Image (cartoon, rainbow, N blue to C red; front, side, top):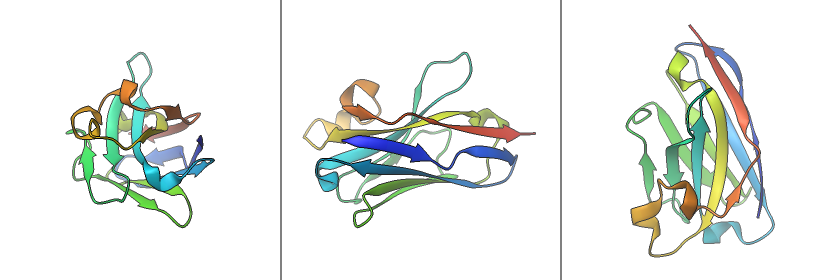
Length: 127
């Protein structure tokens, strides 16, 4: 699976952005998808994930209610709609894919569960 993230940019606090992650290669529908982010000087952290058919989503507490993850099987793309952005959301955002299995529900927030990673897209939120 090859992943290509896009949609990052500069936005003012309170604004919105939508990130996209296009997948190619193996069967997209077999994979759960996730978004992680890494702020300057910090470790990469979990943001959101969606299971193989879009029926389940999970979010980090810090983005719950502001971000929405979704997927479009026809386009092999996963999205992260980010609203009410804050300066602390500034980071490089990475999409990731992991083959759906029974471990997903207990491991979706772990980087190590995901097998494939995109290159990252920078989101900068100004105050």
